[in-house]
Image (cartoon, rainbow, N blue to C red):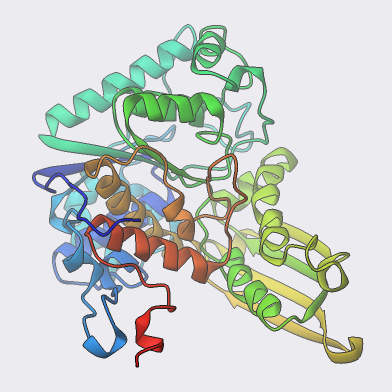
Length: 440
């Protein structure tokens, strides 16, 4: 990449953030942003807000905050709206989800949360069988539903005096859908939507509507959405960024750290067994085998791409990888991920690693959603369109160019993200192979 500064439109005015879904993740993001605005909390977990970026030689000490280095929209510029099949306000949703402490983190921003009432959703129980709601749009076909969502986007932008918008999927996991003929081109997709084709899920309707309105779309779930040729065609045609899929928040985050360690040290892998228990809405949805299949695919793909068994058959050619998710209501949003990892070392002697991650699902996902909103808005203002592979850092299943395999190593992903920011600002990229190591 060249080092001349990229033209980026100013981050002036208000940035509208429309979440598809107003459940645990969305209400946690919104409440958190309102608390941070007031100085009542810190944006812990947000690379965009708390991360630094080194510029030049290590000896120069130039390590600004990312938010001071690139022209991101400010926290004070964000305006939230949502769609959800359940008519609860953000305040009611936050109370019901039980993620945040009521008196410390909900009541101080209750007025702002109560103002966010979800618009009627594009919802079909055939795609999320364990949920239901009556705050739902009704139209003759899926193309008309998309037009209704487009109108919602335009109306929200006008009513809230927004200069720009981002749409982010924070809703439940849909059933597994294989790419097919309806997804091969934009024309085929629009014909399928008009014919109410079953291969077009609600998430794809939202993505289509956003892209047609020139609004970036972020897919936080493992749904088949923007990762098909028709959607990439539309994103490139309208000049809009897309990225996804499935926020990398808990157990898979650890896999993208531990698996590169095994590969770096040339330690072998016999098997990796992962199980999860969680009791929130996501856990209930994933009790349906077809919804679990969508999640399983994104979770299973990580190890194979990191370890590259074709290159290292004696180390990774025959490992067993199992993933399980169990709905356990008493745990609520406090997901527990157990991993048993059977490895082997010198002369084939066996060893084990065991991990028990008692995490908080939405607490980990909320800063990812915030970062993705800010970075995707930056990409749009910089004229970047189509798949934003540099945002792979945030996803279990990163979107990538068709000619490439996805990069899952967390630290390679982080380097790519920061180097893209350096490139946008006309700074030299950091490769750790520069002249600082080879000075006379």
